[in-house]
Length: 475
Image (cartoon, rainbow, N blue to C red; front, side, top):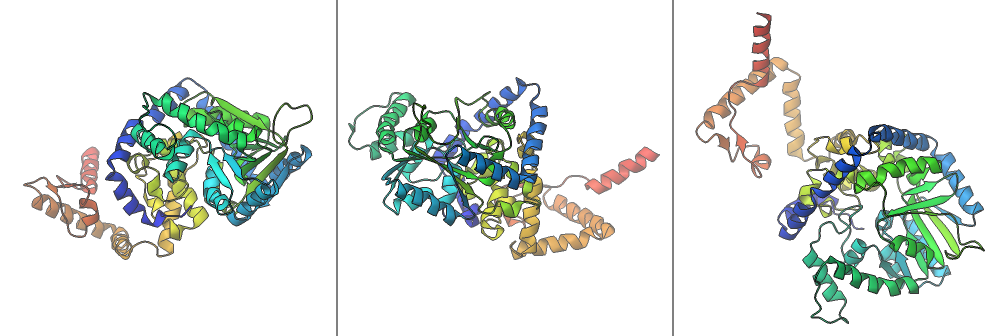
């Protein structure tokens, strides 16, 4: 997927001016937080479970080489194949080779953010293989030639009229005057179209929410039946997963599953939680003849042992997106790559480089809500600060920002001068803004006043008031 992260500001401005997007965001903004809050309230041990989940992932990452090797050995013991892929190019080549060996012309796909990271659809199409997205949200996005805007609700940004218009434009063999009375009609039309694709597919590709080391099992969590059809009907099943998806045991996986759905959609458990271990056995009634797991690194191992290792605990629940005031204002496409929101603001620089995504760690109010709701207790604001430091060290910040910080640093190292300057500055601004009570324009602060007014200061500075109250307290 082509990264437009360097254009975050322009993307965000476009998003805020998009009436359709703002309508969709306003409609859906409160839903996920409310559902999560209700689910958490009904599970008294949720906070204890968060700590357990954190420890499971920390232990796994500390011993990742062992658990990856254990997982691979158990996949092969069950009759499957593991493909170790250091880069996106390696993974794309592996997927293409499997499809070509199978003689595939049509490939069905379950929802997978890793496939977006790899650009699998475009790669298969370039080699005359037709990929078909089977998740309802991903299906409409494929018709519209758009990337996902959310990691669990990919068509989060669309309204019902967008769906209807896209179906009429794409399904031209159906009556043009057909009426979509309710959402169910849209679902029925999509199901009818996809059913024939499921039956025609030679290969099915899914992602994986977890990879269980002790059994060699891949796990997918969905609310639609498309994931099961994708991995059981075709002759070949390909699992795309990054290396940090590994979990030691089945028991550990169950603990994480108890966190995942509650954090993501407010459900106790998703409608479908599917475990796949190897290809079809002799006495199985269905399943693929071949089972392949693509294990992708693509920059993850470079995060190990760094200040960004905690990011690898992420279980892709999207709770941080759902509670982020920035994401809920500008939507996912503004972030300009596969992973949006707070988790994307940390992960994207690690995977494509901070030089290509320096604006993302700055796209935060640092309200801390993302960390407070993260089921894995990932310190997202702290890691965004680390990226800001690296951005500054590499001189990626604008010259005006760097010079402004230099001036502030000079004053900050001289407290007496700093306090004198702030008192003089506040007194001057208070005097100039007394009549209107606010500033709509200020020299050297155009970026601030362009989008908001600055209230005129009233009274003392914080330091002056604090000193006065301390003196009064001692008296």
